[in-house]
Amino acid sequence: MQGLFFESDTGGRLVIRVVIVLLGFWTAWRAGRAVASNWNSYPLAVIYTCLIGLGLQFLHHALFNGPVFDLVNYIVDVVLLLIFSTAGYRYRRTYQMVNNYYWLYEKTSAFSWKKKN
Image (tube, rainbow, N blue to C red; front, side):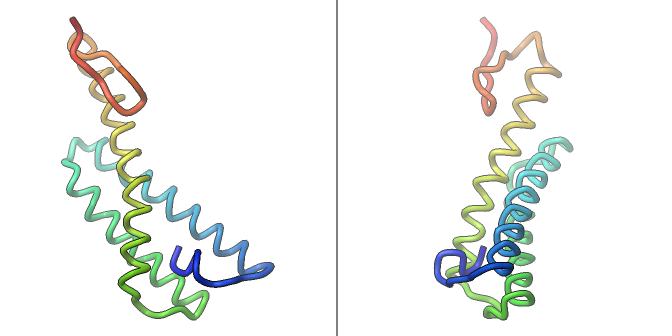
């Protein structure tokens, strides 16, 4: 995602850049779901997301000759990845709470639940 909004690409490089962005988002979603599946707390999902952001920084450096580490782009990457990671975490945790404790909770949306009356 580094340089996604700042550089101009044409042809094959643009396709590779889009694929890397999609893989980053998908990986963040899956990391959030994995943390929730093991009943771990949300801060672990944040740590995993930061590591995924570092991995994307490396890919952009290796594939597109970008800077090794750019703090501004890293922060933008991690914020965008946190959106997907949090969504995956909340989606999976809602599923767990509603299905494992069906007598206590009911689903209110894909990302939340409430106590049954």
